[in-house]
Image (tube, rainbow, N blue to C red; front, side, top):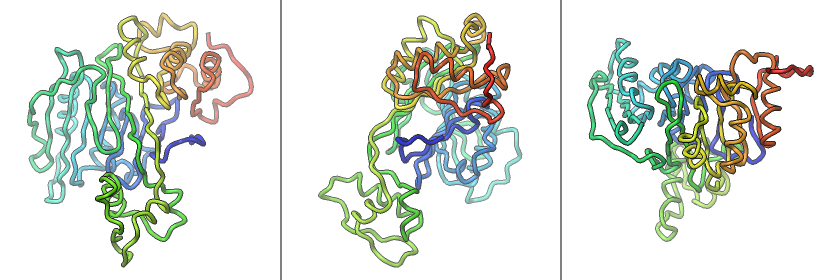
Length: 352
């Protein structure tokens, strides 16, 4: 679903609101997409998956981690570092994934995975790397113990922060702050003569320099000429304001956790929020570590977010997902969901 005010940096709820939680954040023309959770990812094109540079795992249940194999398959022949964040236990889980296959290594296969575990101040900070050219042998790195809410990853496009959630297993939530700046705009580019290529990165590197040190013209590979920087910016790029994306799933609402989550996603442009249970199912939500539609709508309201996107509907509501959406909207009107066609029914049912 694309809203009229969506940024150029493309967001995709990969499996809709009823499937495995997975959000893909792409910065077009770059090689550093962000993947929130790694549930089933077959709806992503292999070209999209190979662009992933950050994997933000909330926890290690199968519906949040099964897609990591697809990420491995699509990135194994790249020369890049893929950063993986997750709760305590993530290093061991990634090590088992990588060790489950027989890898034929060629000189061009230079992918490296760097994994950071997040938890309480006492637990957090274990780091390890797995290099394809070394047979994915685990290399423990110096500990990095970021405080809860602090920046754990950063690149020229975004910063990543986290907070602890409260689930049946160790679990974290994330906020990604997209930095203000120019982004390659595929919509504008369709009307131009140039095709995406290495020149996109060179343009972005140039505009990050102070104005008085920028090149006035840049060569474009394969096009046989030089183009004015202003012409490239006007014709192929859009300037985006800063935006925050929140991703909160598989957590119960309690006195310790809730304030951390509000602070994490405060002022977010969009919050992807767990809505596993309907109103009236608070006891089950507490027991199994999820939120109801009312609770996630309350989080959106308390954090002052712009829009709420519901995710992770329980399968028990199949065929009645639209009623979950209506429940959440009664508490937070700017709520959306991507529903399977068969759930968009006219007849209204009780979810009690």
